[in-house]
Image (tube, rainbow, N blue to C red; front, top):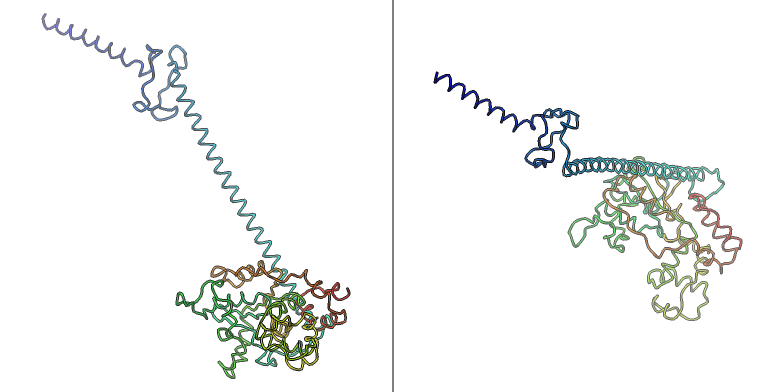
Length: 420
């Protein structure tokens, strides 16, 4: 009897304990919400389980059994939804920016292709023009246009600079950015050591401009006989066939003005003694003896005029004495475009773009950049003023002297200068 009573008491106590557990935990397992205004538990302790997750519990949709969201819970939801939207917006903006960059890249590449195509087309036109003039189709005759390369004397090949490392041949034309192109050739051929580093120059702009005109540092075709003897002409032919050959040209009359300004517009002892004094004696009617130096002559106001310079160029005596100094010698006599099939013909008038195109063509644009040009460049617009005092008959005679260069390289006939 005592045992049975003990069992009944234990049963009752156990039942009460189970009812109490059910009451306490009923809200967590989805029963009636006994505390409708209760603040939610802290998020860090009880993370919110989103619908559809493996641990989510379906709650009845009945308002009497669903927990009433508090202000804090609503803020959390709004905050989370806003944060999610912001995150999606940022991702969308990132995609838009990426697409914009890709579009800009495609546009840049298309512009580059278009520019390269235009540059290549321009080069083909320039080369075709030379071939047409050299073939005689344009009825422009000039000395040496039909002779083969083998008949050109070695002394007339001294402007063809060779870089065997990069397989390049450059024919330099004075007063056509030749100083800077010679600097480029010095860097490529590593033919000049920098005294500061003890190593070959790597930056063209660092190469002293006065040193690049020292002929000893450049390998030219004129030196081949001394180096290779009887094999020189054969080697020249091979290099002309396989190397990339280029030159830069300029409006012939503007080049003449530039040469005069540079050599006779300021004291230059060498040019005064060799040419300036000759011009003054022949055409200036200077009484008495001339000053010994250019500095003295300039101080006394005695210097050649541009008209005297042109008269000197047209004088038959000048032609008999020499084939012109390189600074005013015709390009067809310097570079022999009828015998040398140049791969690239650049122009000073488009120097920056042509230089950029050429360095890419030579595949050396990653090694160096072309030096910035001179700010004191003679402009084509000056031509009319410089020739204003030159008689028209002399202008026309001068044009005939340089007509091959005008025709070969596509410069328009300066009618305003010839007929004004």
